[in-house]
Length: 111
Image (cartoon, rainbow, N blue to C red; front, side):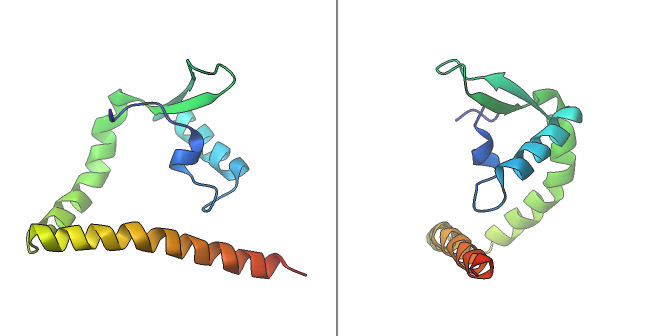
C-alpha cells in the first residue's frame, strides 16, 4: 500500500479510540497545518478520504526518526523468530486492550 494513499478517517482514528467528532476535529487541525488533505473517493463520491501531503514528510520524519532509530536498535537484539512473536503479541494485545477500554466505558456509562 503506498505511503500516501488516501484512507477513511476511521483508519487513522478508530471508533474505539475516539468519537467521530473528535476524529474530524483532529483531521481539521492536521489539514489546517498542511499535513493532510481531504479528497473525494473516486468509487463513491459521497465519501471523503484523507491523504497525507508528501511535501510535509520531512517534518514528520524529523519528529519520528529518533524513535524509529531507537526501536530499530532494540530489534537488533532479537532473532527474526522473536520479532515475529513480538508482532504476533501486539496484533493480539491491541484489540484485547481496546475491547477492555470499551467495556470500562460501557460500565461507566450504564445507569
